[in-house]
Image 1: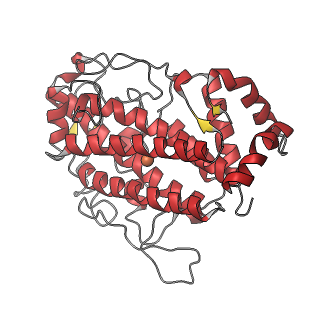
Image 2: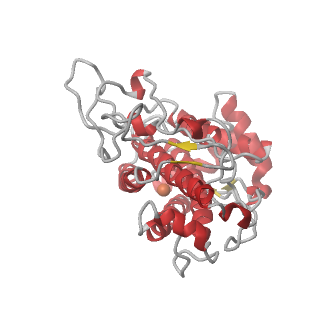
Length: 361
Ligand SMILES: [Fe+2]
């Protein structure tokens, strides 16, 4: 048993990665897993899927922790940081309970990766530790801890097409359909989701734009988890692993549902420092069912085959390539700007292994 991602194990990790890349399970891979198979009943595919999810949850925890330090509730459950009053006030424009929700989402992600890693270890399987990649800078704003981070919340390029994807009645990403952006400005350029320093706390429309960006980022992250779990669940083998995915996945959906509602409360404005526009989604040229802000439950749409009646569903849930799809989406989001080539290699290899898993293997 070893821990993926730790410096001490990088050599053996690279050996495994090469073996996987060649399309064959290397001898080293089998040596570490055969005894575990006999003892724990998990297949190598189950372990690979759980490891990818552990990595995703570690990354989620890192970003949520940064949000909590500045805009959440800092307490014994989610320690670290001391809050930024101006940023927190701007978040509270979206909902007065935002600090509590940020806290709770952060704690949920902490428990997800801790549980999955503990479960893997208990079954004699390799676990995931990304501590050696905590190299990105912290916000310099008052309230943030000064320590190395895994994720970058200060140069986000946000895809907000999830907004229209869940409102469409005729399209489904699993059919190859694409969807318009709710906030087109966020999809090009780089924007902070947290104040980079106290200089970002004024003027008021600037810090509000940062809080609005965070509001849309929260939902972007959690809609990803909402799709990732059901997508990967289709390829696990052990019933208990299926139970884990079916029990954690819907909590991501609970998060997404909450954040989608809050993002709809982001006040329309133009950031005077960079021109970023948050449009009024209820007015022309937006508006209508594709943009209406209180349409927070999924509209029914096509599913599996157009011959069936439309159905209210999570989307996408295509299983093939789901792990790599998540990595690509998070990377395009700017979340890993500044990370090392080794970090991307580790994440890539974890995703390749998860996507190679098949039910029964
Ligand atoms: Fe999670």
